[in-house]
Image (cartoon, rainbow, N blue to C red; front, top):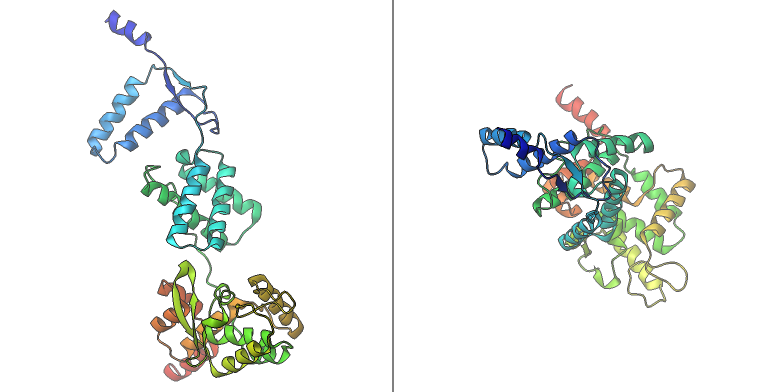
Length: 357
C-alpha cells in the first residue's frame, strides 16, 4: 500500500501543448475536464455508452492527483491557413469572387473576435460572438442568419476534412426571420423610367433587365457577340459559372440594336461607359445611374434586382409554371424562386371574390 501511494506521489506532470492565442485556462480542474472530454469525444465512434462512461470514470480517477502544466512553447495557430484552404475549396466548387470575399471577411471577423484556434472553438463561443455582434451592430435577423450560415459552411467543411471532430454550429439553429413582401415595379414605373432616359444605352439596360430577369452581375459580363437577335435570346453565366439561356422581347431587341449601332468604340462588351475610353460598365455604375433616375422620378427603391423580382411576380401572375420560372431565373432550389415570386394583392382580392364571395 505504501509503495502504491509513493508511486502516486511521484507521478510526472502531464504537459499539454496549447496555442499561444488561447486564453489561459483558469484552474487545473477545468483543464482536466477538457482533456477528459476531448478523449471521450475521440472515442465516440468506437465505444458504446456504457464503455464511454467507464472510460470517463477511469480518466477522472487517473488524473485526479496529476499536476497539469501548460507547455511554454507556443504551437502555431493554423486558423488562417485553414480558412485559406476552405476558400480555395469553395472557389473550386464555382463560387464567385464576390461570394468568396464575403465568406472570407465574415469568417475572419469571427476568428479575430473569438481569439481562439479554430480547432478549439465551441458552440458557446459562437453563440456569444453572434450575440455580441447583434448588440454592437444592430443588424437585421437576415444578416445574423447569413453569418450563421457561412460559419456553418466553414465548420462543416472542417468536420468533413477531419480537422475537427464535430461542427460547433450544429446546435445553433436557423434564425427566424420575418417574411416581408418586397416591392415590385408597376407598369407605370417602368414606362416613366423608359421615357426619362436620355441615353440609348440606359434605355437598353432598363429593357434588358425588365424583359430577361437576369442578374445585374450576369448582364455586365455580356458581350455583343453573345446576343442572338434572330432568336431574341442570349447565354449568360450565372452563379457558379452555370450557363443558361435567357430571352428578351421585341422592344428590347429594337432598343438594343439602336444602342449598338450608335456606338463608335471597338469594345466587345455589350454595355460600356458613356465617355472615352468606353470601358465595360460595372455593377456600381448601373446601380448609381438607376438610383439617380429613381430620385428624379420619385420612384421608391430603384435597384437592378427589383427588375428581376418584378419579372418573377408577373410570370407567376400570368400562370407560368414555377419550374419553368426557376429555370429562367437560374435558381438551384425552387424555394428561392418562390421567395422571388410575390402574388399581387389585387389578384388575391379578385380570387377572394371569385371563390369565397
